[in-house]
Amino acid sequence: MSLPKRVVLVGPMGAGKSTIGRMLAKELGYRFLDSDRIIEQRCGANIPWIFDVEGEAGFRQRETAMLGELANEEHTVLATGGGAVMRPENHPLLKKDAMVIYLKTSIEQQVERTRKDRNRPLLQNDDPEAVLRNLFSIRDPLYSGLADIIMYTDRKSPRLVVRQLVNRLNPRTPRHKRQIRKEGRNHV
Image (tube, rainbow, N blue to C red):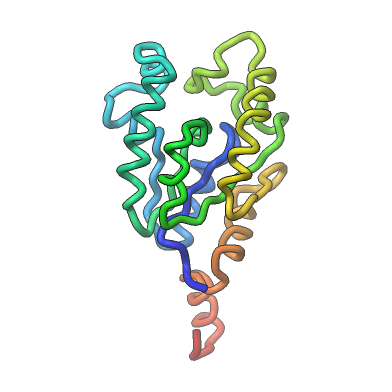
């Protein structure tokens, strides 16, 4: 089995898509892309500002355009925004030549990981946990339906998740080859 042309990470906010994505890309020898960060760079504004000015619908239009552009990038690991799965037209863009990985985490972990983050417009209210529960009930079936691999991230270090993903994607990654050479074997 060879590595997929692209790896796409989906899942809720706080699941670790950016952190794990960066580490996974390095491990695979791929380029890391974060759709939300690219949108911010191109707009010259952060996501909360885009939400304030254009609303969620405006942001989602930008997101779909960005996913369309990134769908042709090979040898990449793409971290998507939590809501990227909400528009059906995004589904083929996420799946195109890609292995889709759903980083699944509990509501409790999401609350813990996002509680101090002011860059998440949907959570800027009096009950962010209720928002996360509602989003999970809507989005979890979409994440699961798109996923080739579902990886639970609760109480796991990013390094462990990456190691488990590398083993699931392909046991013969550059790291594996380096390990074989290090052990003195002549075959790969």
